[in-house]
Image 1 (cartoon, one colour):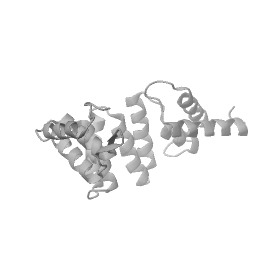
Image 2: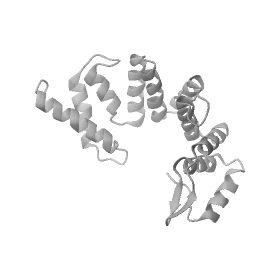
Image 3: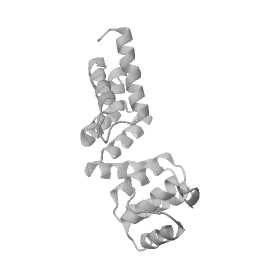
Image 4: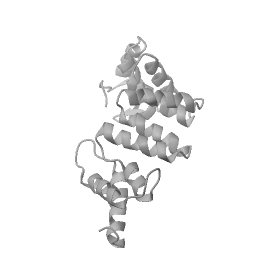
Length: 194
């Protein structure tokens, strides 16, 4: 979500000036702009620069911005554009979870999934689902395959169905909806639970 309106280089320079004065919300926004780049009317205002994005997220995190804390953890967990530090990423995600940020729980679940601790990953995916009051494709897939929990295709079916029917502002991504549709189609095709 963009906080300021950047239409030209002058706007960008003003934003940078504000960010350098320890405004952690603007620092986070600068990080987002570097993370994604910004083009206005075919003119590149901010060139995508992931290293610079990480530096701004880290600065904003150090000033107390929780969104920046999560993005810093994302970079640290992958070790791209910075030195990989899984233990610090875990700590930062845990701070986000304490603040009720579902994305932190979901991203931490991915770390545990990669560590093959499927039970812990499933618990964190469920926690994220509750925090965001969302329908998590990851939780549905865990139930479908029995990963980190007992296999239960009826619960998976219900979650997949909720995913494809969710038209709220915070609905799932197009990929997740397509994935859910695929599994629903599979259930109808196989006919074991439907």
